[in-house]
Length: 231
Image (cartoon, rainbow, N blue to C red; front, top):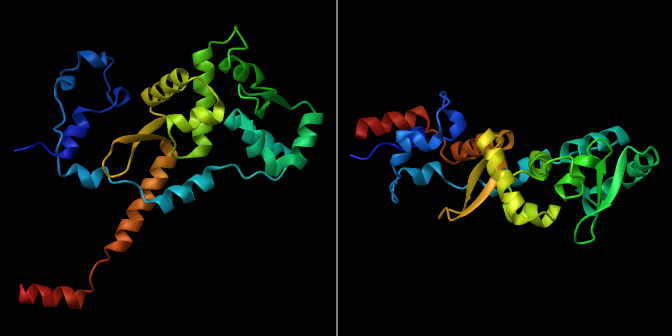
């Protein structure tokens, strides 16, 4: 008999799921491989409802109405492009005048903004501040972006932030090791891979379950009784 999907999930848990401090490569569970065809996994790894993903992503994006709220949004995101900051142009005037935010240029010439507090960190992510490790700065920049962007891919992050693909990929792996983000399959075939922040993914899955339950409502008691008598 084949072990259940739950058993495989326990054996192949992420490093942060283990209570011991042993190296991941030394665990005997790493010697077990997952069968290529496991029918039970098709329902577990089912793609999230697109409407649910869109709804949660829209909710995650900052809704700022005052200069202080725009500053807080930039503190979380780390960096926003000119197009993303467009709805808050009026608030940006006050923030720029008070030197609370800074304007910079991305490698492709696109204008972007960050806060004065995170200026050095953002500069380090693009190789402009030697006193801060570039990989760590890139990781923190992507961490902030993942909190507001929802389900996304490494290619999308690279296109928005204009960071090297290797740095983006390594940052995603480091955040995954922390348990901050999770891999999300794209499509029923499961070939493509996306990423999502933990809290946002939990919200998506909760609403996705609600959608599935609405599709399969429980029958009324009289119908159930007649079925039992006929059965």
